[in-house]
Amino acid sequence: MITDPLFYLCAIPAVLIFGMAKGGFGGGIAVISVPLMSLVISPVQAATILLPLLVAMDMVALWSFRGSWSKRNIKLTLPGAIAGIVIGAFTFRYLSEDAIRILVGVIVVLFCLDYWFRPASPGGSKPSLVKGTFWGTISGFTSFGIHSGGAPMSVYLLPQQMEKKLLMGTFAVFFTVVNLVKLIPYTWLGQFDHTNLMTSLVLLPLAPVGVRLGYYLLHKIDETTVYRLCYFFLFVVGVKLLWDGVSGAL
Image (cartoon, rainbow, N blue to C red; front, side):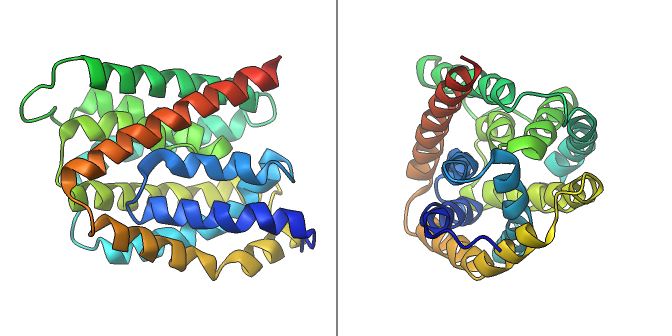
């Protein structure tokens, strides 16, 4: 296992932040976790260490939001997400992580700006096969590389203006399946060595703590504030991804 104290100084808040997002607080802010851990280790190793923890978080989130999820949206997005994971697995050795960051960052920033400056449509958008497949594929693809699938899924789900628990429950079900599927190519690519697995095991107790903390905070704030926070953190994350991607590319 990793023994560097500086690693845990970055990894502990990274895991708690991701857990809180899984619990419904902060939405897309979870994408900060991999870059935070990448200050000490490689992004690939950070993503590998996080994946078993994400599966544990998903189980807690699934239990927390049990019965509250959009079956139609799950049916529309999961096939595309699995296709995106497959694409990610086969392009893993050739794809630049900075390119993924720039792609997601541009999408997210434009989405947030459009939301803030375009007049709101009453009632929100409806589930769509075309949009669900497209954003599901983008989410699966970006989730495979840097665990940033939450941002593309937010672009698809947030405009539907669902009740906050239904929204977070849909995220929970979607990413439970996505992260379980990701275990297969991660294993195939040989990412789960002894060091990574033991480090994941050491950090594992933090996973449910973060999720339950996020779930607690979600129920302490009203629905309008939840959406405002989601869009705010999503925009911050988009800008950070753009900055990191462009800085890395240069």
